[in-house]
Length: 104
Image (cartoon, rainbow, N blue to C red; front, side, top):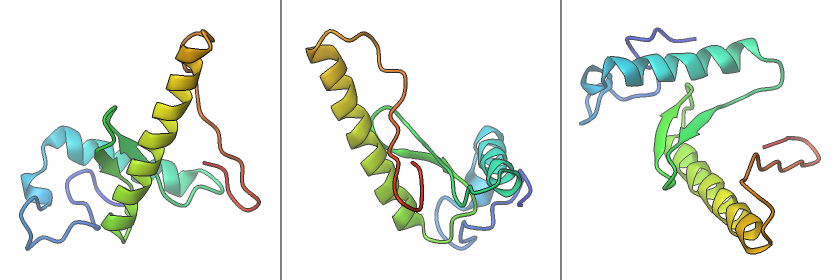
């Protein structure tokens, strides 16, 4: 698990390095790291904005993969919300995808 003040998956030589993250962003990344390391079966975690942008991530080694997952989550949430609205089923509570070897 990483410290809330330095995120291991951020290259320190790039723009947007850990030193450029707000204290809130560093803390959010640290919380996701803590969740993944202390919860059985959880490998990675991301936080996604309502418009599909990656907001925070656990110590995922591949940022492009995390951003791809954020786009997938955004699309699934949008589709489920549209269906709930179209069929007057009320607000969206959660979207669950159950696979043979993982649950999203």
